[in-house]
Length: 501
Image (cartoon, rainbow, N blue to C red; front, side):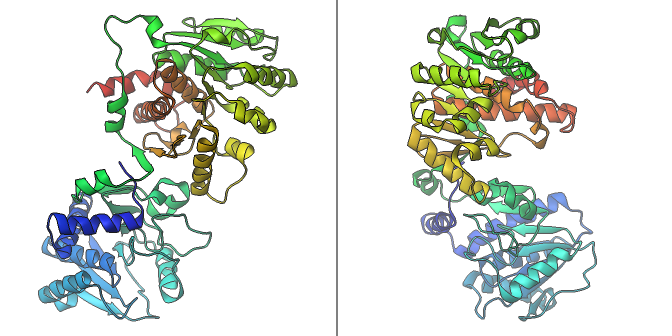
C-alpha cells in the first residue's frame, strides 16, 4: 500500500471527485458511512456518544456520523467547536442535515468554553481536526484537547487524532488528543507507523473509501507498507525438480564465548527459510553446541573463544555475519581483513555493525547488494543520534543511497531502506518479539532469501515480512508474553504455508 502525504491525499480526494464523478459532500458521506459501520460493529446499541466537530471537513465527517448513529438508534450528541468563524461547505451541508432532523442534536461551543461533567461511559468521537491541520495546536483548542485527555472516557479519532500531523512526528509536550482507536481513510499516514504516535492513535483501522485507483497507481511516492500482495508478487516457491544447489550456499559467521546461541539461532533460521546449504563459522568453543543443536548445518571453526580468522568465504553465495560475534581485538582484525577482500554480498548484523561503528572507514568497502540490519541503538552508534524515529528512518534512507546498500532498520514497523531511496514499512510482527535472539533469527531468514537468488531489496522485504508473520502466529498460539526467538523459527513453517493459501 502506498503511503501518501497529506497534500497527496488532498489531491487524491479532488481527483476522485472530478473523475468519478462524485460531489465532495457525497464522498464525505462515503467516509462517514465506513466509520459508522465500524462503530456499529464494535459498540452495542445502548452506547452513548458525544461527537466533537471542527468547522472543516473533519467536522463534516463527525456531523455525518452523528446523523447515522441517530438514525441507527444510538444516543448521540454533536458539539461544534467554533475554531473558525466560517464552516467548510461540506461541513455546513452536514450541519444543516443534522439540524433538519432535530436541532437539539448539535450544540455550538464558543471559544474559551469547555465540556465538563461527561459521564465516563460516554464515548467521545474526535472530529475536530484531521489531515488538513498543518501546525501544532495553540490557545483555546490546545487547552480544550488537554482537558479532554484528562477525562476517563474512551475516545475514537476520525482520520487523525486532533493535533497529530500526518507527515511528521510531534514535539514533546505538544497538545494531541489521545485516542483509544483511530479510524482513517484509504492510506496509512506515515506518522501512524512510528512509536511516538501510538499513545495518541491507539490501533489504527484503515477504511477503504474507494478513492480513484488510477490516481493512486500513477502517483509517485517512495513510502509504502509491505502487504501480502507485495510478498506474493516476489515469492519464489521451490520447483519440483530442483536440488539443494539451486537454493544457495550460505555462510553464517558469528558466535563467541557466551554468545554461541546467537549463531545457533541464525543458522537454524537460515535453514528453516529454505537455504540449500548452510555452514556456520564460529570459534571452537561453540563447535559441539552447533553440531548438536543444528545437525543439518556444516561447521567450521576459527579461534578458541572468538573468531580470529575468516577464510574460505569465496565458495559461498551469501554471508551473514555478526550474531554473537563479539568485539575482541582479534575478531575486529579478522573482520577488517575480511571486508578488504570480500566481494560477496553480506548480511551485516549485531556485533559486525558495532565493529563498523568503531571503524566507519570500512563502510564504503561493503560489497554492493549488502544488507545492514541494525536496531535503533546500533544505528545510532553507526550513523549518529536522531531527534525521533521518523528522522532516523530518513537518515537511514540517505545512508542506504549513499553506500548503495539496503538497511533494515528494526522497530515495531521495521523499515527497509533501499539504494533507490524507497522506504518499505513492515506491517507484521508484535511486541512479543521484543526479546533477545529475535534479531539473530531475522538475519538468518534474510540470509536464506539472499542466498536463494532474491535481490537484496526483495530478500529484505521477504525476510522482515515472514519473520513478523511467524512471530504473529507464535503469539496467537503461545501469547506475546511467552514466545521465544526459537518459537519464531518453529512458526516459519506456518508462515510459508500461509503464502500458498
